[in-house]
Image 1 (tube, rainbow, N blue to C red):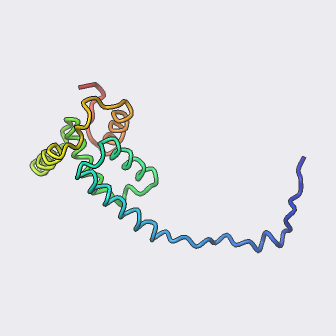
Image 2: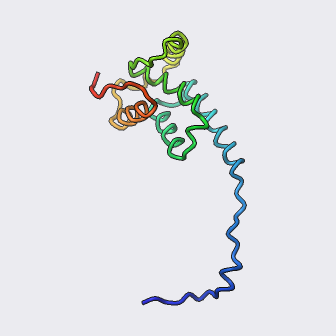
Image 3: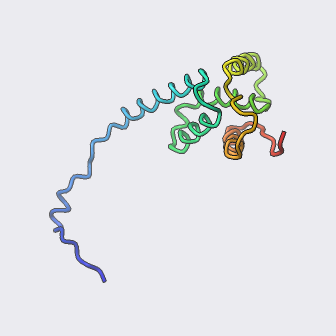
Length: 138
């Protein structure tokens, strides 16, 4: 059975629902975190799986468009790690250099076997970004 609220109508009308939220400040914070994320990945501070999870989180928040260029560069390196032709002939030399640099740093070679989670997440994210990822195993 429905019970009436103990709050009066006039009290509910007085409540302030305009909480001051600094969205621009929060966005600037997130942009700084993403830049730190890129630097950490380049320095080999975390694995390919962690990078893919961060990219996935950024896109789930609807902010992928703000970091499109950075995400594309990192995914090019991830694609090279998986042996996928990135299809960017004019960038091939710079990507090859980046791939060699990441190999020297040990990025992406933390384990020979990747987890099912990493494989599926990498497959989905790379496919969403237009990479020609094979369904078969290599």
